[in-house]
Amino acid sequence: MKAILSPLLVACSLLLLTQCHPLKEQHTTTPPIQQVKPRNVILLIGDGMGLSQITAGLYSNHNRLQIERFKQIGFHKSYSSDDLVTDSAAGATAFSCGKKTYNGAIGVDPDTIPCKTLLEEAEDHGLATGLVATSTIVHATPASFIAHNPYRRNYEAIAGDFPGSGIDYFVGGGLKFFQNREKDDRNICEELRKEGYLIQDYFTNDINLIQPDPKRPFGFLTANEDPLTAENGRDYLLPAAQAGLTFLKQRSSKGFFMMIEGSQIDWGGHANNSQYIITEMLDFDKVIGDALDFAQANPGTLVILTADHETGGYSIIEGSRMDSLVTAFTTKGHSASLIPVFAFGPGAEQFQGIYENTAIYDKIMALMGW
Ligand SMILES: [Zn+2]
Image (cartoon, rainbow, N blue to C red; front, side, top):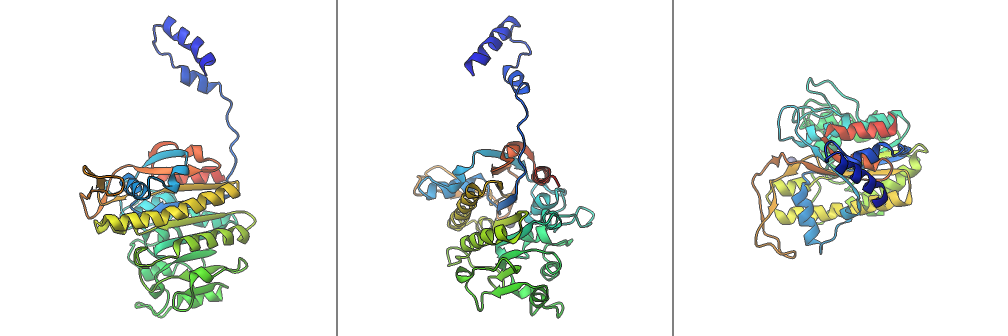
């Protein structure tokens, strides 16, 4: 470094330091790095997970988080097409389709025209696909990868988009939107079984005991409505993620795309409940560690961790100690702050910098050659 820089610095001083950029100069002489195409993509979304949420999780966990294993870090601009403060539907559609759309939109553009999602691209290219969430599986974030609907609360219609989607593995709450529906007599669980799925539910099964057979597509509905909080005993996120990664790895020889959401970090923010945020953050951090372990054991796996937006205008204020945080909130809703993006694996360096939330889609598409 010194040997290269010092002649340049001499040249700089000769030019009276005008328009001399030794680092830039050096960069242009570096041969381009051969980009390796990822085989698997794991997209981890902490709903409502801003920097303060990560910070609170970190200090509450003896100053350690699995997130610290990431080395490539950037920020995205989370605003939607109609509001500087996005919601989870527009936020997730920006990732899934690469389009800024209006708050409430599920996999549709500002004119309510359906847009092709990363999950659909993955299906079309022969990859296995998966969605795991700690909300209902038809909630805004997972829904935006598999469904197309002008309005996020049309949960039954969103569930109706699962048959025919080709999704290989899904785990989340919301059984009541699949069977015994209010608006029609469709039984989506039966429709999926006719397509060959093994559909399990919390009435009769325990996710911890399930080893899904990769020869059959698999769905597990973990609650009739919203799953419990981690604090109240919800314990499926890590086993569902682990089982899912093993399953998807075997499911297709071409690789997989999987989205895993820590959904309730957001709900802790809406409730202005710091302890809720922290327990959900730490539950999600275990999955982050597991995804990184998987990526280290399976080279060719790209892991991207981000959030759709921050929730609560959460901050850690004066009087805090590492083992007892003093916190404050500025809103019961979301905020507009920049959102961190962490990446690991082939192409991870592409996620450095500051860019639009839609660029996460663009970067994944480019790396995959889609
Ligand atoms: Zn929210």
